[in-house]
Length: 70
Image 1 (spheres, rainbow, N blue to C red):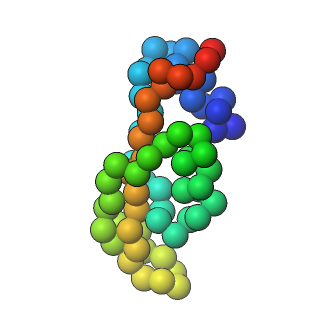
Image 2: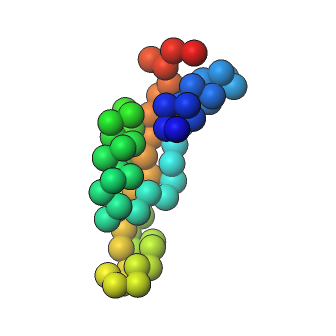
């Protein structure tokens, strides 16, 4: 689904993609986006309230689409 999303963005003419709110403790999501070429370009301190952990950081993740084949 992640790769499909990147291909569709490229087809639509976008040159990059950004996710503005990836919860920092969601290791599976952070790992997936990193495997798909995203990097963390920013941190929003205490932007998400977790039921157990209280307020935790979120990440802004970005990647260019120039290497995506459609």
